[in-house]
Amino acid sequence: GENVEQHPSTLSVQEGDSAVIKCTYSDSASNYFPWYKQELGKRPQLIIDIRSNVGEKKDQRIAVTLNKTAKHFSLHITETQPEDSAVYFCAPRDSNYQLIWGAGTKLIIKP
Amino acid sequence: NAGVTQTPKFQVLKTGQSMTLQCAQDMNHEYMSWYRQDPGMGLRLIHYSVGAGITDQGEVPNGYNVSRSTTEDFPLRLLSAAPSQTSVYFCASSPARTSGGDNEQFFGPGTRLTVL
Image 1 (tube, chains in turn purple, red):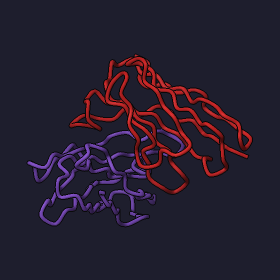
Image 2 (tube, chains in turn blue, red; image 1 turned 90 degrees about the vertical axis):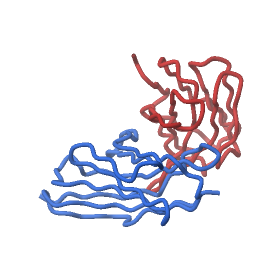
Image 3 (cartoon, helix red, strand yellow; image 1 turned 30 degrees about the horizontal axis):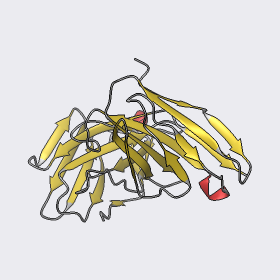
């Protein structure tokens, strides 16, 4: 089945700086790549997703890039703000159409 | 729209007890699923359903049963609770018949379950 890894497990950045989280997957048939944000004690919420026929997608301060050849995709957050502090999960869809979740990256924004 | 609702929010069980976690959605979504989230970990799929009358097992189905008699409801039953089932349980729904599809999964607020 799909093997998903996220790096790093914890990321601490200065407010205003950029943050990048990488997700690697193993199923070459994966074709849908979402990122979810989970604030402490809350439910996961989709923040951005990308399909396999697109290399990059941006939404204001958030972007996702996809490298299908290398089987990884990354979340980019620019001009980080305190409200970006959360745990971020990648969840690529496998060939059985199930989302397979990474273990999460805790993003800490230092004031 | 209430979205995805779950009850109860918190539950404490003794080993061996059974209970049902309730999940309902009012968005007419075909796909519904149950996940468990253990501390510091991602979500693991327990069971899912692609429509009324259809259910299937996910990654960690042992000890849990589900049914989907209506589009709106997808209850999760713990048959005989064990301490290893202490976790936060999330129900999610999506408009697509396949998991996520190209569509967002909408999550309920979660149920925090402790088994003593």
